[in-house]
Image (cartoon, rainbow, N blue to C red):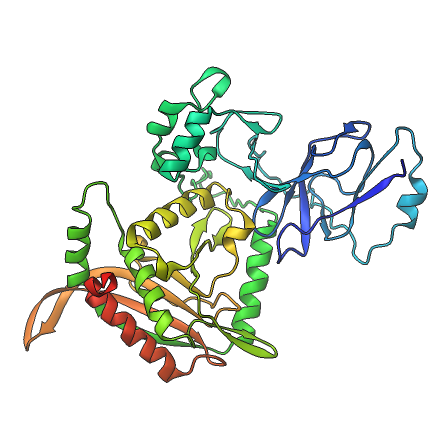
Length: 421
C-alpha cells in the first residue's frame, strides 16, 4: 500500500487555516478507517478529524498548538516501516506553519468529550462530561434517544446516570437546559497591591476570523444607521398573555425575530446580499441571532423564520444559545443568514450600533425596554419604550428602503397580535 498524504482539511466554508489542538494518535499507531486522528480548531468550532485511510501513522507534519493553512501537510499514513522522507521533502505548499508563541502561558484546557455527528466531522464539547461515550460512540438507550427526539432535545447535552454513564429515560425527563449553560463573564484575578500584572492570550482561530471579517465589513461596506424607538406597552401585554398558556414561554427577542422575518418578506431589498458582480434578493428568510461566547461572537441561524411560530423560534434560539456557549454548534448551523439581529437589551444597554454580518445588507441592534414618561393623546404618562438601530449597506439598501422596513417592523412590534394573523 502506497503511503497517503493527509493535508489540513477545510472544515468550514470560511476556513483558511487551522490549529491542531490535540493529536489523538501518535507516530507508529495503527489507523483504521473512521478513527479520529486529531482535534482541529477552526474559525467556528473545534472539530474532530476522521481518517479515511488505513495503515500506520508514519509522520506528523503539524504539531499540537501549531497553525497551518488549509492543504498544508498534516500527516502521512502508510505501511509500517515505510520510508516517507522523500514524500515529506517533495511536498510543496505555498504557506508556512505558524508555531505557537511559547512565551504565552495559557491555562491547561480541560479534557473534552467527543460528540458524534452524522458526517465525518465531529464537533467537540468543552463543558464537563454530559454524555458518556465508548470509542466515540454515545451511550444512550433507544428509548432515551426516541424521547429526546420527541421533546426536541439534543441528547448530546444530557448527563447519563445509568450504568457506565448511559443516558436513560429519566435523564431525558429530568433534563433542564438552563443547568448546563455557563456564564461568559470572566473571573477577576487576584493581583497584589502596587504590582503591575498582565496575561497574554494567543488569538484563537475564531477570534482571528472575527477580527478579519468585521474589519472587511466595516471598511468595505458603506454603513449608515437608522435609529427608531418603539412603544412596547402592547408587546408587554401580549407576551404576558401568550406566556399564560401552559408550557409556553416566549421572550421579547423571539417576538423581534418573528416580526423581522415577516417584515423582511415585504421588503426583499433589506433581505438582500451584496456580491461583487450582483445583488441577491432573497425570497426566503434565514435570521442570524448573535450569541456572545467566551471567545467572541457566533451567529447561529433560524432558518425560514417567517414560517415558524413564536414557540418554535423560542425553542430554536434557546437551543442554539446553550450549544453555542458549549461550542457544540455545527458550521452548517452558522451559515446562510440573510439578516442578523444583535440584542444587548438583557444587559441593560439602551442603544448601540453593530457591524453588518456580510454578505447580508443589514443588521438590527436591539436595546433594553425602558420605562419612562411618554406623551400619549396629549398627556404625559408612564410608558415603556425600546430603541433599535439598523445598520444598512448603502450599496443595497437606500435610506427610504430601510425606513419603510422599520415602519413595517414597528407595526408588528407595537401590535404584535398582527403576527398571528
